[in-house]
Each structure stands twice: as structure tokens, then as C-alpha cells.
Image (cartoon, rainbow, N blue to C red; front, side, top):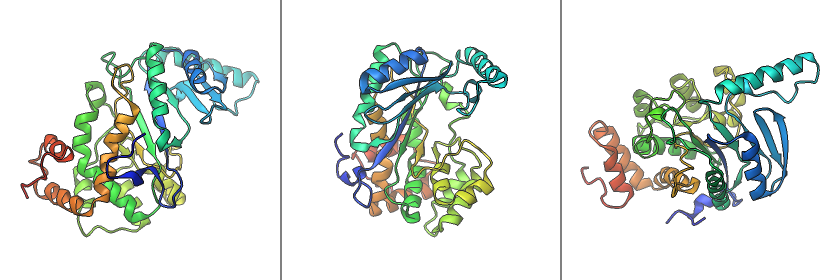
Length: 325
């Protein structure tokens, strides 16, 4: 993948190692078995059925892929045995999957790959499309997402804060470009940050340490269902603190931003995982530009209620510099 223009450091961690990114892709229209076959055809590996609605393609060139119906009710824990209770749990999960599959997406969770290898996920999306997979726009009730998990470049509170602040500045622009379907705009699974929280975090004097940043975040956002879910990252830094403030067992610690916003439109020619990464990368580009960040933050704090998302698009495209300041 080509580096972001003027931002090649996005491809590496601060210690020089290749930066990785995880991809979670939701879709409809395909069985679990067919999706596994697509992954195996592209990346080799061995399909391991786990239940009627979940499987793993293990040992691919990138690692293990998880494929499942995206509902906990249709999944069976790996520790479930072969006794009568285990049989009943498997049967209950199979029945739940039959009912839920009408509106619940299937999901492929890819192992983290080097950011430079992200076009391999475009190959996967194209192969799923060729096999008949449907994206979020295919039916009115679909609300399918692409979730990206770019590794943080450094576990440094100042850098993480600046990235979060840059996201808060661009959130309206990102929502305007990512959420094209009403089903996802009204979905409870992806919600914008509260305005009071945005303005508090964007104040020039806000310079928290890790504990203060995490406490402030969870007091205002006691949920995973934000456009940018910071809980996995925070849990990797302060696991005890996050566990004390959140009882959600789905929070899995990992040093990555959990970007939940984009639609999954894999059945539309021209749509790509890489394209959505580039949209996210605008956040990182802004965070890395001290002068531009200060200008945009001032514009938001003084004029935020008056600025249309198109104003941000003009700046991002280099057509203007928010001269309103």
C-alpha cells in the first residue's frame, strides 16, 4: 500500500517495527462454510468448524481467521464439552443462529496484518463480493460495519490523547462520509461522542495522565458503542482501572484504536478496506501536524455549531485552510 502522502511514518511504530492493523468485516448473503472457503482459497489454511454458526480458518499465510454469525447467542464457547449439557448448548446456539441470521451479519475477523499488507484485505472483500456477499446497502434492514484496529504507534498518553482529539474534531466529517445508510445512522452500535465530552477534551489546557484520561472517558462513555472505541486500548494500559469502571466482558485488551464507524459496502465495486483506512488516516495526519491541529481545534471550539462537514472536506482536500479564522 502506498503511504499516506507526507505521512509515511504511519506504516511503522515509533520503535521502527512494522505497524499492524486488524480488520473485522461484516456481510450477509453467504454461509459460514462459503466464507471459510473464500478465505482458504486466498490464503490457504485449514477450516475448523466450531459450531453451526462459527468456524476458524487456521494456519493461513496471515494467521487464523475467525468467521461467525455476529451474535453471542449463536456462538458456543470452546470449553463446552461433549456431554448432554454441551449438546443442549450447541443445539440452542444453532436454533438462535437460524432465527438471528435474518438480520444479523456474519463477520470475518482477520488476524492483525502489517499495515503495508492491507490490500490483502481488499482481495478478501473482492472475493467475497464475487461469491455473492452483500454489504450494508443491499437491504434496508442491514446495518453492516467494517471495523479497523490500527495499532497505536506508541503507548504514549500525549500521542494517544492527540489522536483522540483529532478524531473528535473530524468526527462529524467522518460520519457524513461513512454512514450512508439510515440503518447504521440510527444504530445503537455506533454513536457519536457527547458534545460536552468533545468540548472538554478539546480544551487547550486538558493534559491528563493515563488514569485521568481513562476515568474521564469512561465517566462520559460507559459503553463500547462509540464511533471510536478506546476501551481495548485503555484496557491494555490500565487493565485494573478499566475492569473497575466497566463490567463489559467483551472488552478485549489490545494496543489499538477500535474504529467502528465505516459501513461495510463490500458488494459495491470501488469500495475498499484500504479506502476506509485512508479516511481514518486523515485523523492521524491532523494529529501529527501541530500548527494545523491548533487551527482546526480553534475553529471547532469557536465555530463548531456553524461549520458544516463539507467545510472539513474542503480543508482535507487542500481547497482551503479554514480562513474563517
